[in-house]
Length: 345
Image (cartoon, rainbow, N blue to C red):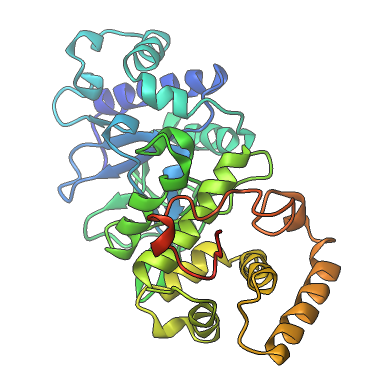
């Protein structure tokens, strides 16, 4: 896998340009380096750090955020037509950093962040690259090392960056990530997760929704929980509170139940949606018996006692903050076809 000195030098120039961009504040700008089976040239995809994850095979892998948030470089020919930009052949690392910043505006805007952890790894990786060992996350028919990635020098192993490990669901890799408003296909946050949920259920999307960060906007939380309701209603045909309880008791009976639970209960957050549904049933007197009403009244008292001290209660959620403070259910069809567990007037 040893490359020519000129290819290695020109590839290193690109890595130095990325390092300069990190210094300018684009610290979520990440790389996925790889080689074809022949091993004659080095390739790199420039992408957001959030795309990267560690697969079940312990390899660095990535999930595509779309073409606008990726750029591809190959050293197949002279090695200095960076990303196919023929006019950049003689650019210095500083000039190349300028070109990347100016010509990839969507990617750069997405990667503007402070991330000392990734920058630290990148600087460490550069010490290997300066010695001629360019990182190689994947090469066809090559087994990855146990604790790192291959390089372009034999027997030199480069540590992996600190990225999330994938989940294995039905033998396939999945990841969790936040979906930000810039990715939504609609301006109505009530419907923001519809296409996301559809693609997960259709098995064309491996990125499961992650509970928004504490610093997120309230509509990010509303969109997340609206996505949960849409999934229950649209893809699991759950239209009553009894249906919902059946699902909770045996999510595996539903085709996409495992995906739903990984998306909306990985931190125990689904109990806030359950409490929201239960309270609306009690208020509307929709429970089937006095015994059931007593059970859920007591359940809510216990829930409130314990949940209020949880950090999950400190962020916008379906239960605390007033009567339907997130305005859930408005992303579903007209009122007459909405599921009864929402109980809208």
